[in-house]
Length: 76
Image (tube, rainbow, N blue to C red):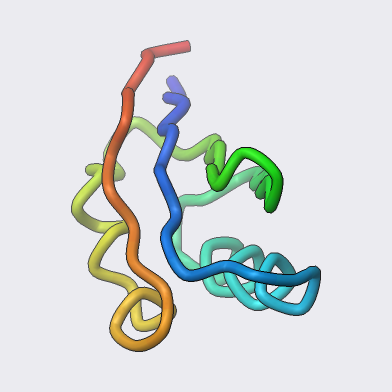
């Protein structure tokens, strides 16, 4: 079973920011797919059901310039 977690991402200003956030999310255990939108300021993450939103918002990529906040969680 998987879930879709939508995150609001703060601090992104360019395509390099999108790449950095995408890489940080993709490296997390249990994450299967990531889509990050600079225009909308969001990340949509497909992950194993065991992953909690706070597992993602507490990743190292969000401990500096970028911040993340959970917007929604849907079981697939």
